[in-house]
Amino acid sequence: MPDYRPLYHVAPPTGWLNDPNGLVCRDGEYHLFYQWCPDVNVDGMRMYWGHAVSRDLARWEHLPVALEPDALGSIWSGCAVDDARNTSGFFGAGGGLVAIFTHHAEFGAERQSLAFSADRGRTWTKHAGNPVLGDDESRNFRDPKVFWHAETSRWIMVVGVDHKLYASENLRDWTFLSAPEFSSECPDLFPLEVEGRGEPKWLLSLGGFRYVAGDFDGVRFSPLSGPHLADHGPDFYATQSWEAAPGGRRIWIGWLNHWRYARAIPEFGARGVMSIPRELALRATTDQGLRLIQRPVRELESLRRETVAPSGAEASSGKRFYSGDAYELEATLVVDDEFDRCGFRLRASKTQETLVGYDGPAGGVFLDRERSGGTVTRGRYGLVGRGKRIPLRVFVDRGSVEAFFDHGLRVFSAQIFPDAGSLDLAWFSESGKCRAEDVKVHRLG
Ligand code: FRU
Image 1 (spheres, rainbow, N blue to C red):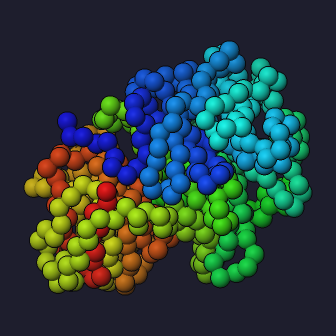
Image 2: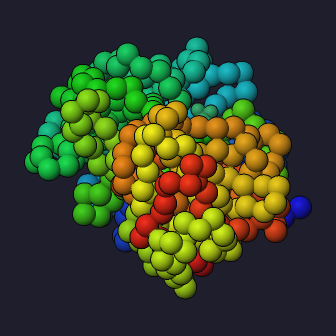
């Protein structure tokens, strides 16, 4: 079995990983907690919060498990905030981190609870008054995401599965506000800059799977545009964005997987990986309203090692121009709607390939992992968006591909499980009339 442990994506040292949790910045660190189970075959009643930290979103340090199951249940998804003003009363001056998560009880109840840390997230104490929201009858009431709403000076929580909004002044007592008419696990709600305009709009994320752009007045969310697909690939779920990221940036990360086959994919001494972190913006489009833009965070450029830059003619020859399993590919696709399918063959050999490209007549960009290797992960995705010169960036790691077309307007995330020897990178054009320009490949280490 090839070694699918990623070289630059976050994966747990051992055990099982699903949703990102508790994404928050404090003291120059990005915290990434995640749903973790000691058993690679996951057992939903023994979910913990695993923990990793980074100063640059590119290199991660693994820390001991942060939260363990207890008498109230298993620790399911949730978030964390920097309670710098000590609104919760858990801390002294300077405040600390508060985690707000779902306690999933064996008898089915889902209630929201708190834990706090005054030592940079290294050790956690569960609140003696848990749970703080929900009762024995609460079902499908999980995945709280909390943020500070400066305009009304209070904390706001959005919680799934049928979305509900609550407000609190101290993170302990919550008042119901309203119920946006959407439903998903792991909702998220945050303001986002509209490119070229001063004023932000709000993005309601439906589990990272879809999103709605709109307005939020501190009580109610009013949709303006959507739901749109956030990612056109199969493997991007339970997305969460960092609270309190420096410079007002909004960055999110997702679980690079799908529940349909998550338990059946190959393991690497662990099972489950995160996506790369992506910086978000909104773009006002003429035909489709407000659209989400996702760009790989610029910090990932620090992972670049050697660069190969073939000429357009060389890259478009159809011959292999690179060999590897962990790299970033940059290119411009020069295409036409009259021409047939074209694009890049990644992780290719005589019998395997993953295609990332453009199909003019069929109607847009696509990702095809039908022959990528692996039995449970197969399929073709996309056919969205027109163009003549289509910029593309692709991040390949041992078991994954993330393709960003049109500067992050159309994104595809997919797991692939090729043989260790399927390493070729080459261009293909069925009509012979399409080509690639501005090609660069950076090995990522
Ligand atoms: C989403 C999810 C969440 C839940 C968690 C349990 O993937 O089902 O709704 O909190 O996983 O691990």
